[in-house]
Amino acid sequence: MTDVSSTTTAALAQAARMGGYAPSIHNTQPWRWRVSGADLELYAVPDRQLAVTDPSGRMLTISCGAALHHARVSLAAGGWVTEEERPEPGALGDLLARICIVGRREPRLAALELRDAMGRRRTDRRPFGDEPVSPADLRTLELAAAAEGVRVHRVRYDQMPMLAVAVAAAGATELADPDYVNELIRWTNRPAWSGDGVPAGTAVRRVPRRVPVREFALAPNEGAPVEPGGDRGAAYLVLHGEGGEGRHWLRAGEALSAVLLSAVSRGLAVAPITDVLEVAHPRDLIIGLLDQPGVPYVIVRCGHSTEPGAPAEAPRRPSTEVIDDHPRW
Ligand SMILES: Cc1cc2nc3c(=O)[nH]c(=O)nc-3n(C[C@H](O)[C@H](O)[C@H](O)COP(=O)(O)O)c2cc1C
Image (cartoon, rainbow, N blue to C red):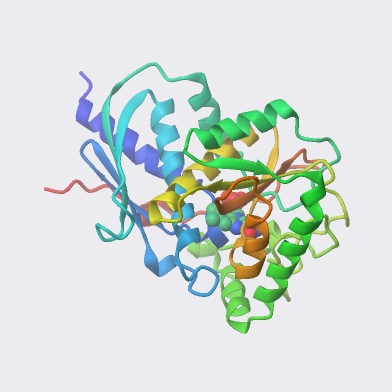
């Protein structure tokens, strides 16, 4: 006979492991999980916050939201019905969310597709091809974000120069700050055993791009060679919403994960962009692109890859360091 409680505990531990596939700012993986009985708790790890790049902790919270969405999808794909509590970030220490298993149901196909996309999704910094993202795909991505309470603004053709200027200005401002550069060097030269950071193999060489990508290849690292130009068919999606409180940034991370996984399950390549939102003036320029007042959370570049092979994989921390699955007595 199956022991239901050990089955739910195993499903929650598996969900926490799947959470480890989530994207995170500089691959800091700033989360910790605790499995206990029928509950899975997600905690932020402030020690992993990027003090210079992310002094407000917004990018940390978005990263944790992405991990939360990955865990939710894992449980839904396993046929588990869950309920969630989300205390306002900071209200109960580092606790961000508690997921509780409350029943079983037949898994939906959409959840299975998103779960399958988790292991394949990578941040692809290489240029995308000329083929545009279809209106049907864009609608799917909008709906994926809307299901998490987040809106999507697709940057229009006439707005592309402003996006490019804003991203370039943010990159130049950040790279002129020695503290930012030191932090970037630390996170792009992590020892292999750490299982985190952005390795040189996942970065691309600096070439003129339609919209620049964040510089991760600082000397002596070179990054993968790529052709100048490209990205002509890429869509740039600004995920935005009404609120700027901690809970909105967590939601934004869940929406980011939903958009990225939906895109990958439809064969699209994806990459988040946030340097432009980390610097005040470029951020205001992005706010000016929105059709309605809103707080921009993250931008997603998506398109059709024409590059051979999958993009290089970023490492992950061992689950034993991230998941506490000893039941509390
Ligand atoms: C909140 C957030 C912000 C990010 N910002 C950027 C960015 O500005 N530029 C970029 O190239 N990647 C960005 N990324 C992608 C991370 O660098 C990437 O997720 C991490 O290195 C792990 O790699 P993976 O996504 O391939 O698993 C961001 C990811 C998150 C969650």
